[in-house]
Each structure stands twice: as structure tokens, then as C-alpha cells.
Image (cartoon, rainbow, N blue to C red; front, side, top):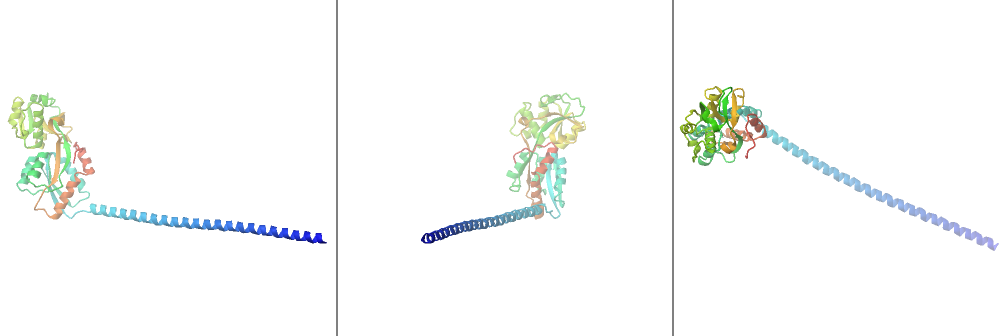
Length: 336
């Protein structure tokens, strides 16, 4: 009986121990589950916070981008806004006559109310007219010399508006089927007659400089002062038709009035069926043939005219303008 009681008590004790163990294990499992759940909750909270911050940052970036785009669009709208009706007077070298017509047409696509009125002649003649008081808003010269005179000596150039726009080259030309024996400056004395601009005209000055550097003319402090008669004597007395501008030289040769003449490469544009280029005279003989442009101080101009004149000068150095210049054989690779 006693042994039976002891066995019962031992069995009861073992059952209680096993129950307690199971309870501890379940509690530990529950604790681990709670810990994982808590960690997941914290991670989820952090993720949601990061996503919210990212959304806010993205929204801020988009707002900044949209604002920048709106500002850019507003600037473009302002820049493209046409002026009210006004007239801008441009004094330009004769060799720019044809290209300027297309440039003006291109400019008027965005500024249809601005009338660009061009006056074309030799740069020296135009300079004199400005100095004598002719109303002019923009001067576009075929040489640096005349622009320097207007800028540095006369003080008539508006500050910050002067730019070197293009380079050109002097060419020795004849009319088609002339059968001339002339091939270059070296045998220019074989010509029966020559059309040559006077020394005050840039192309006449460049031609004289080339003849000096080629050893045909004697050196001079200012080659533009070399008389046409002196050029004729150096060439063996050949007949020279002295012309007032390069346009007159071009016409004299194209029409066959003179056997040869010196013009700019750009002057041969559109006359390929009438003119033959005998020699493109290299820069080491003529020097660079730079065309500078600048806004001119015009006391008679109203504010709108002055503003439009500056914008037209700025347009002449744009990529769109350069494309047109190249079409007419001008070299746009110049230092501005």
C-alpha cells in the first residue's frame, strides 16, 4: 500500500514537471513571435516613413523642375515677343548685299514689325557718311580699318556691341570663255585690262597688300594710299578700270568690260555661270579679311529703334545667321 502511494505521488510530480516545461516553451515561442511581430512593425513603419520622405522629395524635385520649365518657357516667350513697328537703318559693305537680303528675311520671321533698311556701298564711303552725320543704327564693314576709325577715333560705336562676324577671301576672276592668259597675280601683267577697286575700298586695299607681299608693288606704310596709276606701272602699263566698290568690279568683269578683276569669294555666289575663279588669293598675301559689325550711336533714334538695332546685331552672330553666311561662301570660323 505504501509503495503504491509513492508511485502515485511520483507520477503526479512528473506530470506537473512536464506541464510546466510545455508552458515555458509556449511562453518562449509566444515571446519570440511577439518580438518578430514588433520588429516587422518597426521595419514597416520605417519603410513607410522612407517612402513618404521619398514621395515628398520627388514632389519637391518635380515642383522645382516644373518651375524651371515654366521660367524657361516664359523667357522664350519674352524673347520671341515681336517689337512694335520700327525701322533700323543698316550701313553695310557692298559685298554683303545679297546675303543681307536673306539674313533680314530670316530675322523678320521672329520680328515681322522691324523694317531693316540697308544702304550698301564701299566701307570707306559708308564710314564717311556716318562721320558726316548720316542717320545709321548698324555699321557692317568689310574691313577692320573702317570699324576702328568709327570706334576708336570717332567714338561712335555703342559699347559692347562690336563683333567680328565673318572672314572672306579675295579672288582673281575672269568672265567665262575669256581665254585669258592670266592664271594668278604673278602673271597679272598679261591681262589686256583689269577692274580694280581704289585703295579706300577694302577689296582694293587687300589687292594692293597682296601685290606688295608678292613683290610686285613696293612696300608702303599704308597700302591703301598706293595710287591706281602706280599699280598700272608696276604691271607694265596695263589698263586699269578704277572702281568705286567691289560690286562695280564684279559687274565689269561679269559683263566682259574688263578681262580680269579682284573681288571677294562671296561676290561669285550666283554668278558661277558667268565668272571663273583664276586664283583664290591666300591669306598670307592679303591678311585676314574680317567683317566686323557694331551698333552705331544714333541720337535721332527712339528707344524702340535702339533696342531693335542691338537685337539685330546680336542676331548676326547666331548659329542661324552663320548657316546663311556659309551658303554665300563666307567663312564663319572667326574669333568674335
